[in-house]
Image (cartoon, rainbow, N blue to C red; front, side):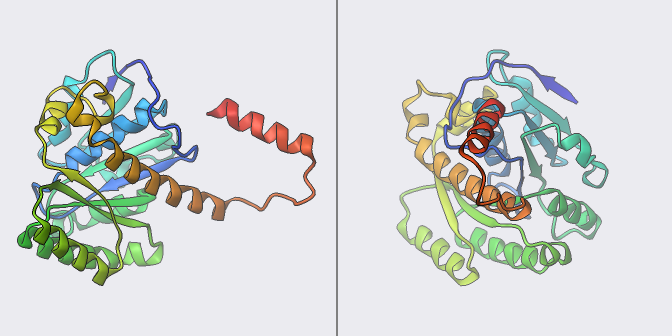
Length: 266
């Protein structure tokens, strides 16, 4: 494990207080899984959360990003090529957020099927990056359909969202992507533009939300806030279903104590 110690600086005041495990996955390579995974990890770390990034890609795509991350940035624990089936959920519980960056072919290669199932079990929400070309949409349709027929997913369905990556001004491509998603009843939560600022962030081990002085990065803030908000809503909903209902007769003092405890944890 490469441990990276940093200073924390807040970013998202709306982020959830619940533990969240995020799987970034698509069987097709080159769609931006590592870009999305590293940016999610950086966003949660910038919000003061204790974050772990698991690079499950055999190409070790996130390793360069983690190694380039400066000592003045928020702390992220980085795990290189862990075996998903052997990841200790007890150890995961020490983190507020765990982000899993999966490799290409994870749902199509029989040798990786057990790894895919293990990652599905570990995750709370699933984010699928996708490009808007016809080839990528066809591959994405096959992957999402396959994901939703997995035995593990059907036994315990997890919220799935598609994010458009490297989006240009090509309206026809965007319309194809929206049509595909409407047929699958999977939301297209956000779109990230084609911009050299992502390569710059990757080379410097940064997340877009950490580049406040960069004008091109600031243009992307809204798209990242939208994705983070979607994740938070799904996580809070799942947490509410697991929690016992609070007695309606709770006193004002009890509620104040609960609020104070929540504030301290935050």
